[in-house]
Image (cartoon, rainbow, N blue to C red):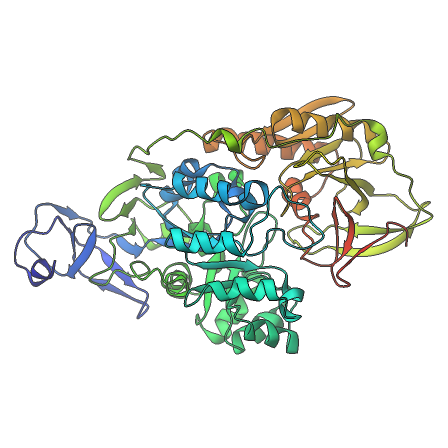
Amino acid sequence: MIALARGDGNVDLVINGAEVFSPLTRTWVSTSLAIADGVVVGWGERPTKERLDLAGMIIVPGFIDAHVHIESTKLWIDRFVEATVPMGTVAVASDPHEMANVKGLEGVRAMIAAAHDLPITIGVCGSSCVPASRFESPGATFEVEAIAEVLAETDALGVAEVMDFPGVIAGDETLLAKIALAGSRRVDGHAPGLRGSDLDAYLVAGVESDHEMVSLEEVDEKRHKGMWVFLRHGSASHNLAAFAPSVRAYGTTNVALCSDDREPDLLLERGHVNDLVRIALEAGISLEDALVLATLNPATYHGLTHLGHLGPGRQADFVVYRSRAELEAGRPPAMVFHRGRLVAEDGRLVVELPRREVPETLLATVRLARALVEGDFTTPIPERVRVIVANDHSLWTNQRVTTRDELTGINRLAVVERHHATGRIGHGLVEGFGLERGAIASTVAHDAHNLMVVGALGAEADMATAANRVAALGGGQVVVVDGQVIAEVPLPIAGLMSDAPIAETARAVVEATQAAHALGSTLEAPFMTLAFLGLSVIPELKLTDQGLVDVGAWDVVSLEA
């Protein structure tokens, strides 16, 4: 390789005529790229076996997602690759804690095995909070020993988002032991609203990043104190544009882009990291800075030293655009190269991926104590009640108190334990969901992924029908009205994912979303919003199978106020 870099002997490929973006200097350089054995061995002309002329085009290092839960795309690993690599994604930092909540280490190992020999770098993080808190009831746990095994068995990037920030701040020994496992590797965080001395304690414990900020002032404080921040635009939570002023004010240091949770219809329609770049540009971030956030910075943070820029010695993972205009519009690149090999053109793969059977142990994971009936969802409503207030485009909920006589615009909400057939059901009320009739149900329910059901008052029979249909599917999402299933999304892999092509899964998601809208919901992504109404580590009020959780008080509270 050194000889080829010197110009002695033929490299595999020389690409001529394009401008190459260097994120290190934020400049466009007119140069040839010489590639051998999947690596950039030099800039400028070299003797070569093959030559490719890209006159007038631009070359950018491949895009990297700084934080994603692949399970949230509802796509099994190879289908995820089919969807994202043609959009220019060459690497992701994956936290498989959705799978870990359902199937533990066995499920995580299955995902890692499924990623073998695919044209992408899937960096795995050891999930730190399974369960997310003591208020959740997952199908499996992921303790210190499991994290240690993932770190030992793979080139894991580090420890995944530490969501139990109150426990960290209080010095919980188990959480600190999990953080310590990272050693020199990274520790991702999850601390919405955390500031001041509590943030200081969180950082002193060893946490290094966050993607759950709720205000620009919080973003700036975290950056001032040396924390990395990941600006996110998923299906349910949009904060990239709101926090772009921090980049405009202070530059790109310690900032990267992430998708976190993106539905398949959004992936299919708008793309992946390429779409994040477009959103960043619309928010006033320069093209060069946006590309730094999508390439060099996530690679630097996660220790992906072979990626992030195209200097000699780096892996030849890059995207080609015909023009800056196509890049700025969020279009799929004209070409995507992985290890110097063309793998996608104009939004489609041009290589065949190995097809592997999904392990049977990841199927049939919905276990109810019995078939559910209308009476399971008709819990009495007290005179004064606590209500969860759902917000569009945000994982943060509010809470308010109302009376039994003032329930206009309020829906019933229930969480049914579905892993161990305990028969346990948590009951609540939610405002902002907007269902005027019928019900929807889902086994995608962060993070324990129990069965969540929301329905109009008086539609308790539909709630039971929806829950039973989801169970019969082996997991998924269902819309029911007047006793009839009008839309469904089968997700048989752990109740979270499908091995169907993205177009098929996305179409089912769109139909289910449209059906929910027809029942009155005004939320852009009602199923994604529903999925986060049970996540007990994001304020203010959430519901699990154990009951209502006041996140600020860090305790279970009664439905009666």
